[in-house]
Image (cartoon, rainbow, N blue to C red; front, side):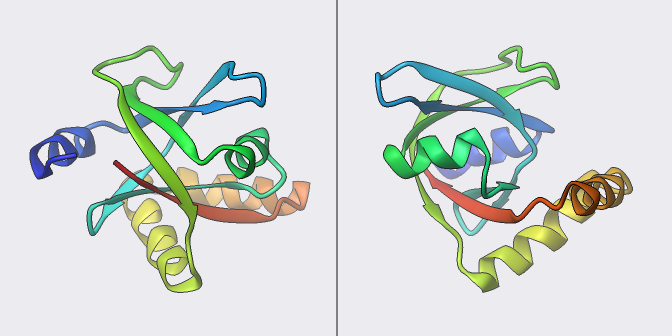
Length: 124
């Protein structure tokens, strides 16, 4: 993906990520994201369906969207990897900065639910 495309994508608040089941069916989910050093990062629960599907197939598609997942742009193919601890730390602070106070509320909610967050990087 060119720097222009990443720059255009960074103007959006949400992207939808399409992960794939073992039978090849796509599952779309709107997510928060940040762009750092040419990669797109997001965090999710390690036990989420997204993570299970990513472990089976690292190929994904992404597109800008609204909060409900309605597409606002073109699809891009990507490949995912799990971020290391340094990337995770940077991702947390950048997401907090981009999305503000609501991230604090979500973290409180996630602690109550006892979720285990993981950071994932997408290369386009």
